[in-house]
Image (cartoon, rainbow, N blue to C red; front, top):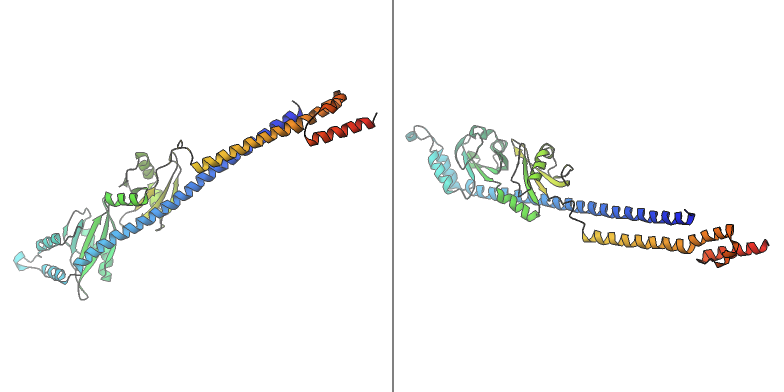
Length: 348
């Protein structure tokens, strides 16, 4: 193979390699940019989670304050907690229960504790051991500070927004009111709707309240639950689960719980590998391909008008010097041809 032909193939190979590298860089940059934007949106979704949680607790606290701040309600409770000889020295818990039912205001659970924190009566279903209620950190804090406390309880796989309010006469506690609302599917659906992402709740032993997640994603979250629950940043942390097919980016928001660990997960469904590329990247790839074709054409023109004629000049000089004058090509070829002709004339 002649040197000019080798140069042609080397030029084409260089154009192809550069075009492929440029296309690969464009696709990689598009994927990285898309991932960065997705993580930023997931982080915004996590802020929505915080806001909705704060709203739930604020609404619950306002309803609780309606009862705890009602002097008539506090007086009735205080009187009912006094031992009644007609009840064999017991307290009138039945009348308290009736009153709580009337003043429930849509709370899932309403519970009354006496001044020492011992449960008296409750409306609604709570799986927690009643004897342990007085030792819950939220209850202990409310008793010690004589102030309203709020937080989250984990009750057999369910999240409860909880507010503990002291019932005070002056500065003397008459009892404590616990109001709780379950974080049901509506709460998670609301997050998913506002964030335009999928939401899941990861617990110590399970993934619950997933908003329509595919079973494979639920299994993926369950497989990483220890890593997820190990997140301590209250503002949330991005995680990249590489063993998904394709990999999945999630935003983990840990929840402060009394007795357990939980985290809210916001994620986008993984993009199928065969989905294709976005229009902007496609246009960039087309531009690179066109540039590559133009570069390949330029290499061919260089070969046709310069490298090949130079090769012919070399062959003519070695084999048939009379053919030198008939060789045509670029300005460089003409210059070389004329110089060779002058050299040949001077040597005759």
